[in-house]
Length: 214
Ligand code: ADP
Ligand code: NI
Image (cartoon, rainbow, N blue to C red; front, side, top):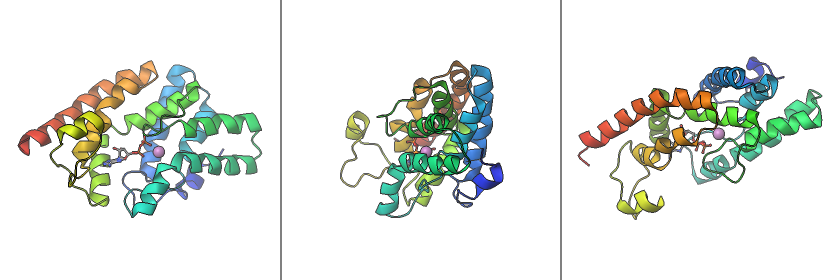
């Protein structure tokens, strides 16, 4: 089992979206969900520490954005290396890898099958909504050089495709993904916690849109 200090080295210190502070919040939340739901703690802990370990940094150029798109797959490969070197048995490594491969909202080709994978997914998504979710979405937009708010076209609302000249603002991210997350969670414990977080986030983004005159 990697220690927290070991894991800290895998994450950028200065990334407010996917830095180690995100991992620590997900770690605490995942432990809480695992205890409530009866998931295997060691699998969950290892999966949390490794889930964004490769290429998850926000911002940067096109190449970085493309790498980010595969960060779950690269992090799962990295996990096999780290846990293999520690002598973990193959089936336990595979269980951790499944959690990591299934943690993304944007790539739903691998749905979380095990309780442990559902716990990682839910803990990670609880960190994408609520007040902290707002902070991360704004930080992502700012570090990527995108506006916090930009009027959303009817086309984007329908298909998720941007029109010519339309920026993918933090408000777009809210409509495209964040507002849907609470209904995508798997565990009953996470669904309860999501309610208040969701309400706070909606209040912020709808308030922002109202002030910006949309
Ligand atoms: P997932 O792996 O579940 O698809 P991401 O890695 O895409 O999640 O997103 C993680 C965090 O980054 C979330 O808090 C999300 O709101 C934020 N984020 C991702 N893409 C954007 C974006 N284009 N604009 C604002 N925030 C974003
Ligand atoms: Ni991720």
